[in-house]
Image 1 (tube, rainbow, N blue to C red):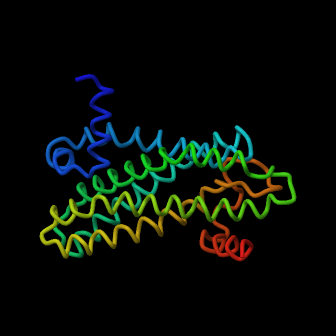
Image 2: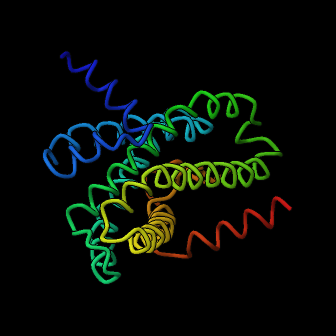
Image 3: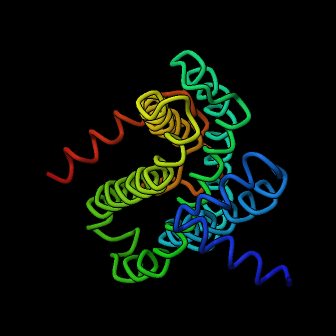
Length: 233
């Protein structure tokens, strides 16, 4: 079977939450899941990141195309260990390795969703006011709220597609559901705060274009989100 055909079949199976593919990756060939999921995360989220950053030009778009996959992979590493411990504490019977694999599959599916939305994101940017215009601050707030909602919803939707598999893999369905809820909350919290540390993603009008801010630990994602909501309303 050609690699491209296999990758396409795996993509379709993952989008369906195919039990056979997930069991194969979890129980027989963990390396195969790495070979498939990591490139999907890099390409899918990188394309969406480029669409976010292109409002400020190619340089900013290139930065965000690099940083969004780094954000997802960093969240994977940090939450992989946390989720594994949570799963064991909650008595789900899901070990550390399988917790990381479930998280890896969830993020790869999330990246596929974001990749499918990239043309829409590009179209929205093409209709946006210039970063130097009087409407730039308002658009920055709208853009931040919009993309935060899209990325958050994509993450919830992608992980929700794996809930049945998590429940079947756990000792009981209830314990599997508890572990899943704890994983999802942790992913949203850690991912949100890491995005603040790794800012800029949306680029504040009037600020310099740079890969990272000089004060990454100053403030929090939730303060910025509240400020954007207040400005928008």
